[in-house]
Length: 271
Image (tube, rainbow, N blue to C red; front, side, top):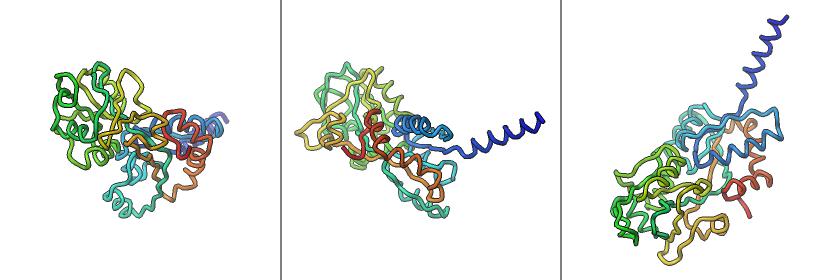
């Protein structure tokens, strides 16, 4: 009898884990979705959600091969990804979960307080190599960015560099937290991170796209769109998984879920 009971318990464990909802992708979205899942599980104790990062590209690849239920992404699907989903016979849906302000951070010892979009482009394409060229000390600029699988890498390139190529000397970091740590420890460093990550021993720079009005990222400037580097954060899922993912999505898009968005440091869908 004990043996039968043990087999039943093992089977129940396997079935429970097999039905666990899998979420994968953007490191930018990761802290937010983790907090949302924690709150959701308290209301739904029987639910099982596993969440892993790795970058937007990693999440979308997992969506294409069917190894995740929800792909987190800080950028829209690329054309080749859409074609791969189409070739795999998979119809998908896109859901905006929240918005994010992308902060430009430097080492606290750096006296620079503001940069224009053109100056950022110069720094990240390698044309500007020393802080004295943008009003700082005579110090080499150490440029940090995300790796190519990151949606943040793609968004910054499109929005700030106007699709020009990054400098070959940029140090590509595997995660956003690694950029924060590296910038905090390197005097001449600069990096870009989601606003929720900007805490720690780093200095946030005011940014201007018109060369006149310089704005720092904050919940206020992100919500009123006066800060210029704002982006939507997405979920993508296969429509065949809609019944599986909809309860969690509905919770995250609810008033309670959007209150968590703001608490964690992201921008809710409405004021």
